[in-house]
Amino acid sequence: MEHLHYSYVLIFVAICAVGVNFGFKLRFSKKLKLFLFTDALILVVYLIWDFWAVSKGSWFFDPDQILGVMLLGKLPIEEVLFFIIVPMMSILTYLALTKLTGWGKAKEDSSDLL
Amino acid sequence: MIYSDIALSAVFVSVVLDLFLLKSRMMTRGIFWLTYFLILPFQLLTNWWLTSNKIVMYSDTEIIGQRLAGAPIEDLLFGFSMILLTISAWEFFKARSLNESN
Image (cartoon, rainbow over all chains, first blue to last red; front, side):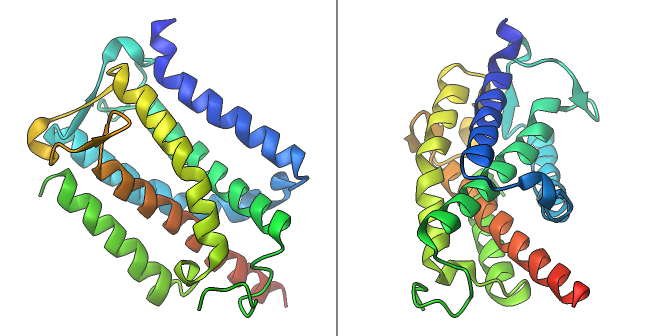
């Protein structure tokens, strides 16, 4: 089970994402194309950064606490999933709060700070 | 360039993209800051899990050494940059897809 230690984080965030999506009736499945575009940008930027940092030894992973599936022999598959699941959760949080507060429906909203 | 430099640069790049290139200007909107400050404690929680268990470890020469919830303080900059870029890009693509369908 030790190999799942990193995965627990992903599972935890994924459960939160499913809960928020259905709890707030956000119908995220209808917005997958939009998310695909958004996350493509995130994946490109942060995986390049991550890959470069791992290559130069800025940070490293305990091989016993990850699944062991590596992207290009260096990046744990968990990192790739992290950059999909966490942005998804960020968007769901944003959508839920937008719905809850009524803020940000239009850019001209009086709730804007500027 | 160490993690500290890159993390600072990432915040700068995200802010420039948000304000001037994607023009979503999420930074000027209350809903973004509300979203960020709700996500922040969860970032600290996951950071704490990943670092206290030594799942992820950092080279001492790559960070300034200040830590919060077990993780390098630089992680706050990384997290902020990613949340800002995510929501900013989302609004950018959303506006574009609406324009295309009109």
